[in-house]
View 1 (cartoon, one colour):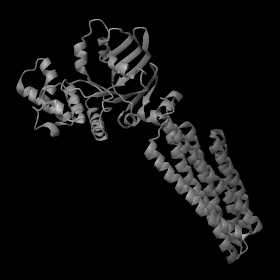
View 2 (cartoon, rainbow over the protein chains, first blue to last red):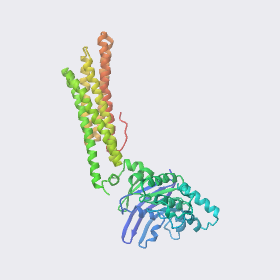
View 3 (cartoon, helix red, strand yellow):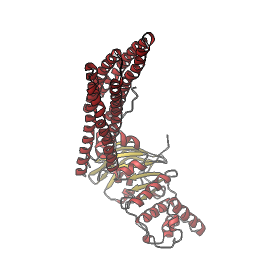
View 4 (cartoon, rainbow over the protein chains, first blue to last red):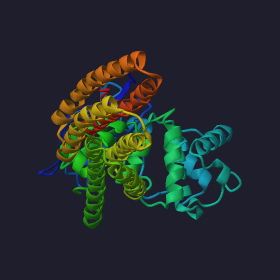
Length: 252
Length: 219
């Protein structure tokens, strides 16, 4: 049994009066890919964002219950959120490179952490781009503007940018929904490679993607976790009828 | 999305119906074996051989449709199990039909007195036909209990088969060369029905998988 990176107990999340998540209990295992699936508005992205406290940016958001990251409750008063977001990186639906060079995009985080030595930065940029499977495509134009890259390349650059912070977990919110099938395939292959070194939690609307790349799948519906199990089990023999109905396209 | 799901559901229903049609044809083949034996009617035996092409065609059609649905719809959960089950059951039914053809060919070719063999075919054939009817009903109704009941009948079929084998061995020991030869050929023929029973148990295993998602070993 792998180590738990996150342990979530009785998580309730409200946007004002609206309850977006109810009584969520999940463990996220180390070096595994966990896919979060469910229809729009089911709470899966809200759940993902609660793992690195991105929901703090929404004023009306309030949370009860516990999210333990490496055995510390991340919502406890005084918890170091900056450090949390260093260890729990995020990649979004739409590639969002900064309007600066490829090199500077990847070096941005380490520089913010105070790393100034050019040789160290060079090494971090190179190894992050290699890990994100984009180095060969950009090694000769590291000073080019990141916005000149294709959508798929931009998304891998964003993954490289997350990797540069040496995180333990990478959260991905529909990372391929804006990409074509070839770019999607590259990201999927990358995710399978990355899980050797990182724990990945991915929100996806693509059932086949969840089936292809994840070890565990969690199905959310109307703010509740209906079922979480090994992906092979969910896609061949789900326990709950609601899961069966959703993944077979009978509703949603 | 809904339109697609509706079409997908229709495709799965069509696939299911083809398996049921194939089952009916195979049951008919064994009923005809019994009729041909009882009336010593070689025309019926020839019809069984000719009709086997239809059964093979249905199997091919189930394969083509099944692979196409997998490629187009990327099925999961019970949808996936339904397609896999259709492919596997049609394979078993095709083999059972082949056994009927082998028996029909034996009837056409044999030239000697073979009443013991023929009686064995009728006796075992009726038991097998009951099993086939039961298993196809269980598939249609997705009735695991009935599938398991039919599966248990295979033990009875095996016991009856062993009795028939004893009879034929005794004939082989004490009768003339001609009758001994016939007894040996008879052993090979009734073995076909025993093997068909094993394929019925495979179908029972697949019905359990279809309904519950669990793989069981019944044979």
